[in-house]
Length: 275
Image (cartoon, rainbow, N blue to C red; front, side, top):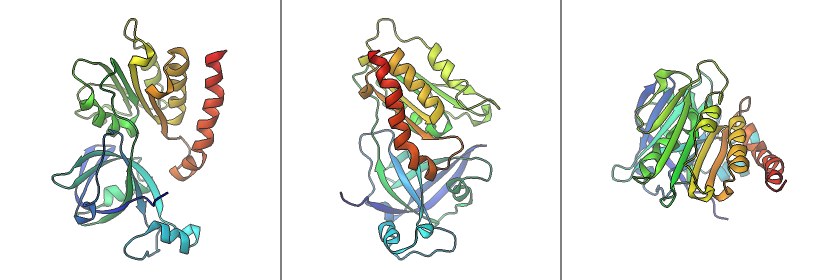
């Protein structure tokens, strides 16, 4: 397997979109080989240096992992591509803020023009199927960039329901087609799950004619996966469903346990289909 392509962008500009969402636009010659493909959920692996650790240039995370102790390896965080403008050579990333916590968010709010950022990618796996008759998109703040990127690709005339749960009305963005759910201090997913369950599927819809995108905090993602897969009978290949993050875990801990978590869901939910 070939090593992932490593790019180095430099901050062009930043913008506070809402009280809890911060945008960083990257550009520069280090993005000359960056390109996205067909997907609307393209993501990149941002790589942040450890405090007090210097890395050889050109930056090579594989070499760092091969020659440095683990505690000095770069820290990786995964973020969705909000927009890639190939003509301008600019990559837009949106960061959810959690006060002064979160390595990537702290970097984003402190970023200044010219600051470098190394990252790998892009990856991705989903875009709205143009042949689908009905599209369902649901997520929390972390899924908003991907949902916002996907909605313009839903074909005109296709039925579409898009739900985004956010903490406060002030965090609403100008994204046409979204139904906004404001949870305030309630648990994440507490409004999103019932909203999806209450939304009627089109009368007589074949589950194979529906295309679903459900991402965000792992607990509500699991609940909605069960609903779509078991109660609605949607084929797995018609669902892009994944926990972007898990309450109480940083990305390192979540990524280390995510494979086992996914396997547990398969073990719990798939047998129910034949019960």
